[in-house]
Image 1 (cartoon, rainbow, N blue to C red):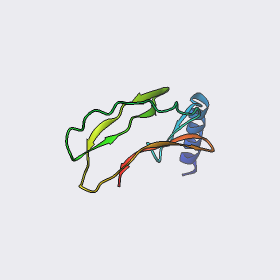
Image 2: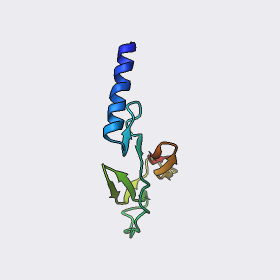
Image 3: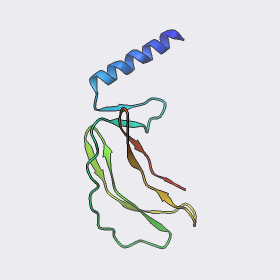
Image 4: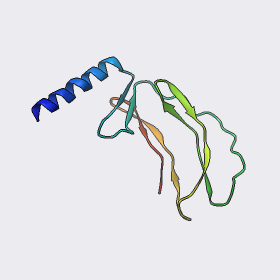
Length: 104
């Protein structure tokens, strides 16, 4: 058990040394920490809704070794009263962390 823990620590240290701008944690694969702040959001023209059950999901900056704009889109709500809570970047002690959007 101690050997596995030590190996995991060594691998984590190596990854942090080789890729200091971004960390993906193994226990939460969606948890991405980036050292540089995301750019300001881009202005988007919202097209006409395809129907009454659709909700507009704003575009956002994603990290893929560099900042990449993910454009907004219409998405059908899972149920009548569903509300979209948008994803956002949170500045923490170790850098910027992505909190993914979800339905409430």
